[in-house]
Length: 377
Image 1 (spheres, rainbow, N blue to C red):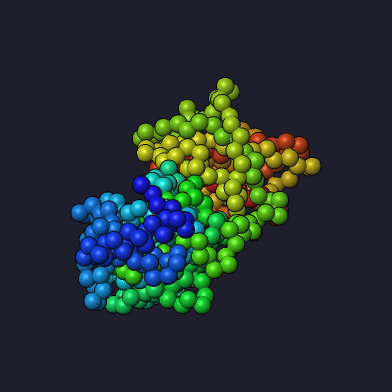
Image 2: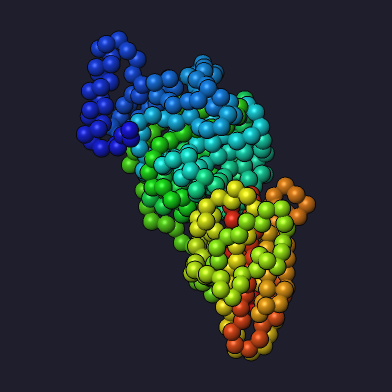
């Protein structure tokens, strides 16, 4: 059952703590100041599967150590919406050190993590990452602009602070005077929920939650840098997904004359988010997107296309481009297999009047979608 941080609940919780202390029992959470919760790393505070994490002592401090099993260590009886979350983290193995917040379920939650294998590398551009989980899919590969550099080390505690306010989040790592990552728009579907940790070989301690304390950060989403850019293609129609099984591509995958089409609009930065629309691809699937391009004269234009994972592009029924963006494989595109407007560009011949742009998009790995921008040469 969730606990909302209202004045009444804080008062009842303080009374509960006093009763525990009178009974000689160690309190699970201590209230150091009003609306500040210091979370003890004790078994009564955490829901932990045996292979997920263990409670231990690290550098003479009670701590939680991630073991790498499936799932996360969930803080009990907390319903977090906005505020500040602070904790210490030390990486002891290569992998990830992850905190989830606003966790409505394992399928819908917000996520921030360290790539611990770059600890000590102050030049790494992907040291930290924000990514929502949408329909159980970690959307890291669709949001490359939500990763960044951070200075953190092995063999010492690293202090982390998340300031979360409505649609925005600022993340501080060790240097509390300057955010290491600013997220102008939290992309997840959930607006409140639990807090949890995971990560093989990551040690977490000194967890402090300050509900409602957002340090003046606006709850309104920040500006979209593409808002005033008319080159982005934002209005699309989408077909229903088709399972491809073991076939790379077949003409039978093409939409027929009787295909059902539904309108879909691009989200921030021009992203057509097919994961949000259709959920996870348990097996490889293909879907078709089409848009109308109107021109005043016959001409050739450059189409910049970001995509995950594979695309087939047609203009007015004629094939113009095919490509794959597969993370960790030779065909991965810059930046490192993530969906980005920098993935590819190619020439599109356009006739005077209306032109139908048709794009098949296949997916079997994490996020699914495209972003398209039509440039002049």
